[in-house]
Amino acid sequence: MATLDDNNHNGQPLRGAIVGFGNAAIHAHLPAWQTSERFTIEAVVEPVAERAAAVSRFLPDARLYSSIEELLAGNPRLDFIDICTPPCHHVELALGACHSGLHVFCEKPLAASMESFLQIQQTAAESDQVVFTVNNWKYAPLWLTTAELVHNGEIGPVHSICLNVLRPPNSGGGASDWRKCRELSWGGILIDHGWHNLYVVLTLMQKQPLVVSAKMESPNGLGPCCEETVDLTVLFSEAEARLHLTWRASCRRNFGVIRGERGVIQVNDDHLILERQNRAPLRYDFPEALSAGSHHPEWMKPVIDNFHEEINRIQERGLNLTEARWCTQLIEAAYRSNREASRPIEILKTEAVAFPSCAAATALKQLPGR
Image (cartoon, rainbow, N blue to C red):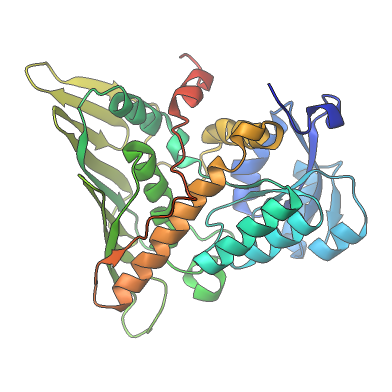
């Protein structure tokens, strides 16, 4: 199988630097890097003294830098950076890494506008670097099983997907609660949970979205602030998906229903119920609810494995970036729809952008006990 970098690294782990040593880095990314034989973290960029002090506890041998400029000026022998900063820094850091000959592993969202995304895409292509977004939710065991059932035709062609994400106020936002500041976060719950649920929907549908409409609610009296409730509809050629996302709930819960021509899948946070015509319902239970916690380190192994695949295998390169393009395009259209009184926004077809293939079957084989 054709490879790009295997011979260059002589089987040695790829060397990386974490940029931003907050909760996502410590509780989600770092456990995956430390248990992988394919990667090693040799440096950390963290300007905040309190978080920089934590580096020695978790990565005692890592070099510590106060800025990305200091890191790059030190001429480190690195292969990639892992961007764990608030969203406002993602584009600049991704572009700088590509220009410096480094691959990019980036927390979502990669970009909030198609203009920024296309700039990243072009720079990645010109520099021959991988830019990879951490789309980890589709590797939750519940979503892997759902994708397997859908793609095996258990409920026939999908006609509708309805997903609900309930979170109480003050959910998420990292160590500094940056999600409440639009300049740092780029948006509210649509940027946060919306990004995750959109790529889950696209993974299940495997079809191009055609039309988007959205209605959003922000804190009263705060003007164009971070939206706290979103009702989003995405139309496909013969199906529709509806998302209800809120930071105003009294509890944490994920639930929904996927309806097909011959059956239904009920999604109930920590279990699925498959209902088909003339058959007894089947229940699938999972050890952790989708709403349990915020970091989910156990979902990260297939994510970093796929990052490694894109770096080393020509035929895998760009699949994740295509998925990030769809998320960026849909979110940008949703914000536009909300500004224009929920007017449906058409998603233009682009022959140059193929829909990414489903990785569920590969990921299922990597889960323990399967």
